[in-house]
Length: 226
Ligand code: CA
Image (cartoon, rainbow, N blue to C red):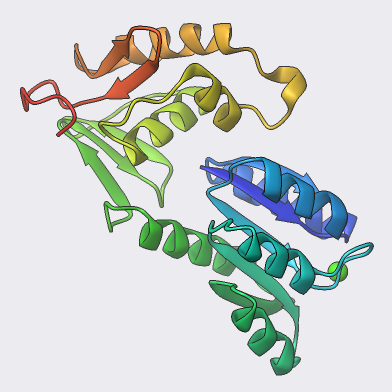
C-alpha cells in the first residue's frame, strides 16, 4: 500500500518511514502541514499517518481541508499524550483512528493493518486470489501453500493487484504505488516488474489489458474479474 507520513520531528519521521516501509508499504513523508496537505490533496494514498502539532499548517486544519475536498483515505492521527480534547477534535475533523505519543511502533503497525483491513473488501489480513495467498500482517506470500520469494518491488506490485483484484490498473497507477518519488517513476520499468512477477505466479494470473494496463484474476476460476 502507499502511505503518507506527516510528522515534523525528523527522528520520529525517519523511524515511521522505516517501520512502515519494512512492513511492505511505499512511504512518502512530509515534514510540515503545508507540504503534507499538498501531497494528500494531489496524490492518492491508501492511508495517512498525520501528526497534529505541525509547523506551517496544523494537522487538524490539514485533515479538515482534505475531508472538505472529498479526500476520504483513512487517516490515523498522532496526538500528545493526555490531550483528550485533541483526540475528540481529531475524530470530529474526520480521523479514523488516533494514537497518543509516545507509542510503540508495533502498535502503530497494528492500527495501520486494522485500518487497511477495514477499508479492503477482503475484510481479512490475508488476501486470496486462487492459489495465491498474501498475508498483509507478515508481508508474506504463499503460492499453493508454499512460501513464494518476492523482491520488495514485486511484493508491493502484487499487494496492489490483490487489493484491487479484477480491476484494471494502469502502468502509471502501478508506478505511483511503487515509487515514492516522481523522479523514479518510469512506467516502462513497470513492464519489467510485471514480467518478473508474472513468471512467479500461476500462468494467466496477470492479464494485460491492451492500452489500459494490468489486471489480476484467478485463472482457475475461468471468470475474469471474479
Ligand atoms: Ca509535532
